[in-house]
Length: 67
Image (cartoon, rainbow, N blue to C red; front, side, top):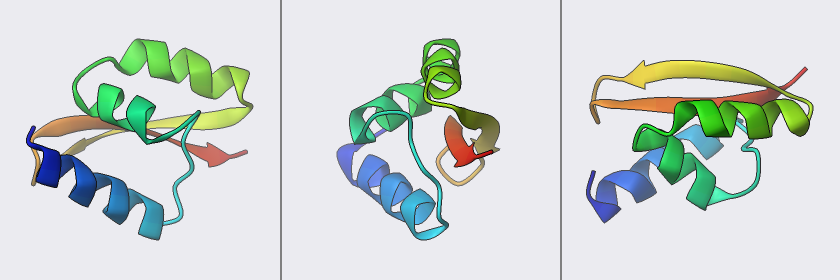
C-alpha cells in the first residue's frame, strides 16, 4: 500500500466516524495485515473491533467503535 493510499484510507475511516486503538500508525499496521495485534489493543481500549476488507485498496482494515 502506498503512502497516498494510506492517507486516503485514514481520512475516509475518520470521516466515517471510526475511532482507532492508539493512533494512525496502528491503523496503517492493521491495513498491512497485523489485524490480531490491533484487535487485542482495541479490546484493551474498550472499543469493539470491526474487521472488514476494503476492496478499493485491497487491504484488511480493523477499526474500533465505541461499545
